[in-house]
Length: 117
Image (cartoon, rainbow, N blue to C red; front, side, top):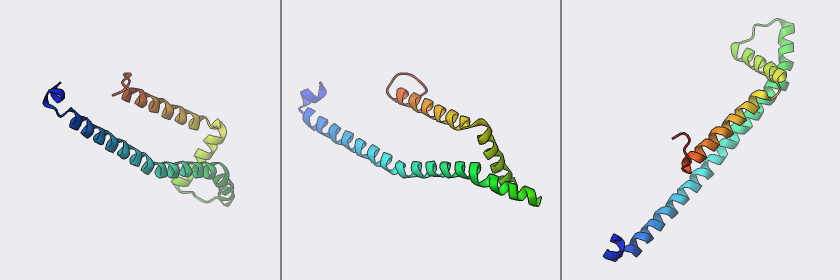
């Protein structure tokens, strides 16, 4: 109403369209900038999985035969490899399920369907 009666409705709508275009550009730039770190973290996860399941157990046999005291991080990696072999990929499946669950909640929340704010 105020824009119509004041004769500035066209200017206001033009400014609003510029703001929305800038907002969309910033969103695209942020999403583009986040792709590389996400790929790096995923690659590190795969490398950690391969190391803990295939490589470190081979070295643990060698260290067990030599009766060498292993540092705590190495013991944790050996335990992680054994846990993955025993449980299969259950921890990874649970992690992925929870990730997608909370991602879906955040999308629904932003869309205005309640959820966690």
